[in-house]
Amino acid sequence: MAEKKYPAGQYLSALFGYARDFNYNHLVFEVNRFKVSVSLQRRSNTYGNADLFYSSAEPKAFAPVLSAINQAIEIAELEGDRQATVKTPDLTREDQIFQFKLKEFGHGKYLLDLSI
Image 1 (cartoon, rainbow, N blue to C red):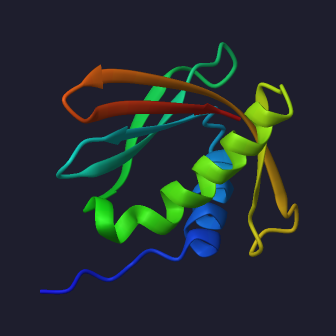
Image 2: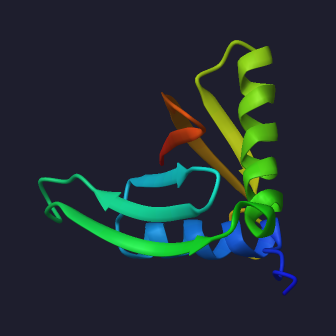
């Protein structure tokens, strides 16, 4: 069965919009060969701490989203910056700025933490 692909602009717009509406400040992408999981984390003295599972998909279906994020990170690294910018066309604020940390665990498992 062919998996439906996630459109990067629409998915990132929904993700960043939801995170900002509910005061989440970390978007965590857990990636391995079989699955990509996205969760939101809030670390706040004002709003309290919270973890929320957002979505998961097969890596091939999620490739456009990861490609858009990776492209933004590569541009930031080339410019020597620790903040990247990604386009979210469905939001009023079309440019979303985030800091990033990438952890590699080996055997094709990665954790990408975007701090917004």
